[in-house]
Image 1 (cartoon, one colour):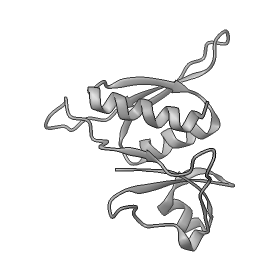
Image 2 (image 1 turned 180 degrees about the vertical axis):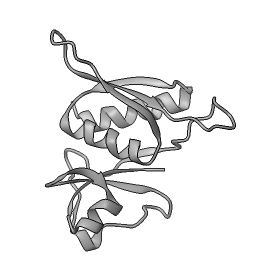
Image 3 (image 1 turned 120 degrees about the horizontal axis):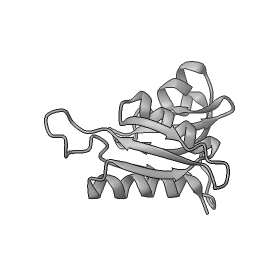
Length: 132
């Protein structure tokens, strides 16, 4: 199973159901995506389970608006590069915003980061997806 697609689907479903806390499997890529979302304040908190008997999991807390605590800030998260059809781009070809408003998430040789960070560091990589 594709852990990135699973993570995106779980985040999308939690946002639609207005569930604040969700769990995803902890892999290096999902940790990087969680850190990117945390840097844009779309997540309030990220914690990793420390139980050694089961698979490691990440506990993600979705950020809500201050004016209405029931409304989740993250509107949409979509996958671009899929296991059967990978999409790569060079640092100068990284889109500033996808569809005018989305912020790209890129897997580079230095880890997972947003498109803006990858462009500043001059790194290209695989376009994992974007969030709004």
